[in-house]
Length: 219
Image: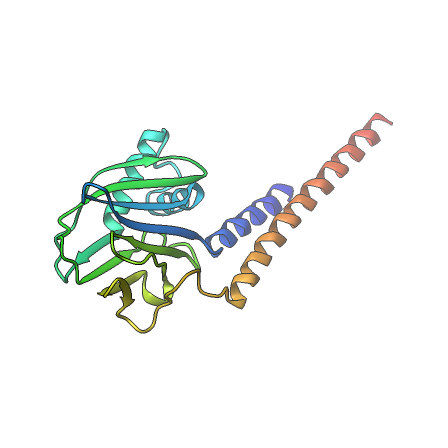
């Protein structure tokens, strides 16, 4: 009975994690030599969750295997179009593992004159309430931050007007910072915390019961 209760609690914790808010960033930046790089930054746990959901719990056994899966995952889920043409390619990617894991690619095929940029990043769509801060960094452009999330299907079209980027779609959230956290976010965070507390209490009570049993046997 003990292991069944513990298993149910652990399954509940896993389900709660799948619905926790997840924050990442998608950064397309121009370098000093006019080349471009793409960076996708997120907690390591978010990458691990996505890889295991798609490929299974035993899909990797070494850091190198995990990095390879992450690179392929980003390539499959990130698309960039400039001036309405699908000419941007992501090459020479590498992964820097850490509490905040950073995936970096060279982005080729971006013209010198840019009128619009379409960016889609669905790398974390299996994690509920995920949000990715979108930034386009280019000489002469004002620094701005936009948000890719469930409300805009993790995709956004930006148009350059003067020295600013303007969101072309009307149903997504733009500006500095993230969209306000919804009531459901608080509920899922609370459920996750409740599962953790219940599991800790269960272990505490089990240890007390085992200790009492051992003392009774000694008597």
